[in-house]
Length: 130
Image 1: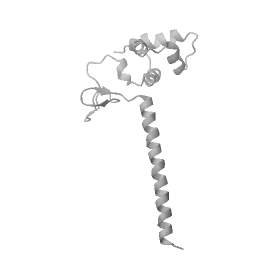
Image 2: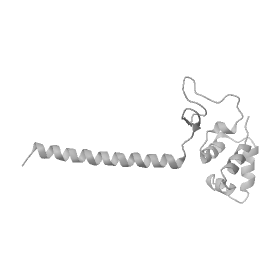
Image 3: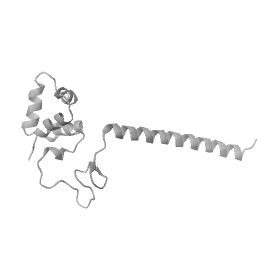
């Protein structure tokens, strides 16, 4: 069963003001409190709830009181499928961590490309020593 009050809990626990989520969801601030309240207490569509989950970087499962957590059949995934287990606890990577890792990978790829270019130049010089 849907439990939209978790949105309120997430806002409070993360010390996020309601105006921040309203801006993210592109809900005008005037009357926005009512719209957010409807999401929390109503029965929102997936189209409406998905951006809320994206805002908090959580699975949509978190907004439903489920007795059994969802795990795809035949998988070794623990929890909501978005988390990475370290043996004892479940950690969900933040957007900042993901962006930092992505930037690092891009830097490594750029360095690899430079080395390949250098090696190709060296091979050409060795083939044509003129």
